[in-house]
Length: 126
Image 1 (cartoon, rainbow, N blue to C red):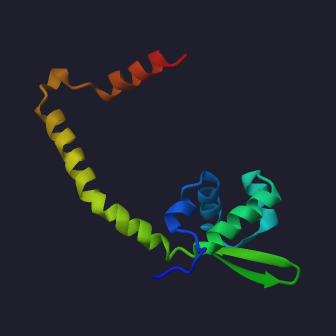
Image 2 (cartoon, one colour):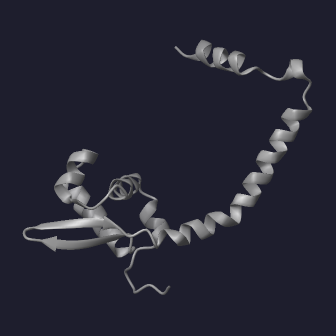
Image 3 (spheres, rainbow, N blue to C red):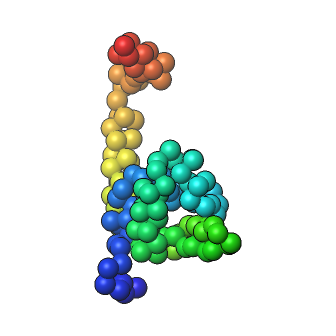
């Protein structure tokens, strides 16, 4: 889909942790700015600024109801991200298969047991 000049790129829009948190919050349903401010513990100005970027990328829709504006997730643009990630899923799965083959080829006594692995993690903790 062609973008108008000034429209945000979906990848740029999701690069910011605050915007990802807003996407997550809106994924639970439509919300107004006050709800988002309270749930994310950031300023109203910051929420409004980040929502504007998400709207520009097409990830957020808006509707007015009286003096309030309600925002909702528009997940369709995330298909672009999913398509890009799909190119790498096969590679990741091959790597995980190789790790599994190496672990399967280890003698049983060389394989760490789940209990010993968790006890090593506990010992490292302060």
